[in-house]
Image (cartoon, rainbow, N blue to C red):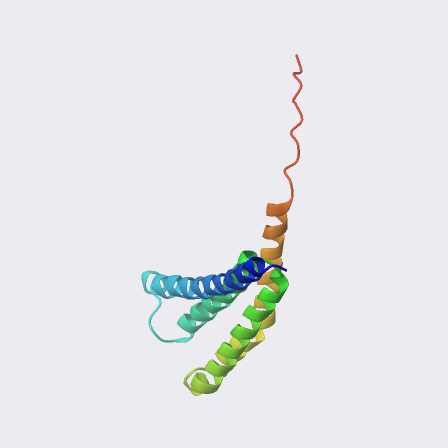
Length: 144
């Protein structure tokens, strides 16, 4: 492998992971912004369910973005994204777990395999579709 290719792979991987972080933050900000507009109060179980759903959607989007933007080895990028989300979720539960109900913490941790699977499979499906050549068009015949 040439040095130029090696540098491109490292830079591309860093950019893919940065895009994944951006996707996670952006999705969670959208969810937090929409909540007051839809009438959810700042506290309560309904708002926690809403926030948990957007946290899961953000995790799926982050893993999908890391896989889709990866210059090579998209599954490894998904695994690294999953590991980063796992570390962040465990840290959040350990640090803030007493402030949230147990079902929220359990949902945050137990949804991680689903986030990893959905995010990776979605990105790989999109990536494979982008790489497949378009089907040739057949001329249509007149039925005259």
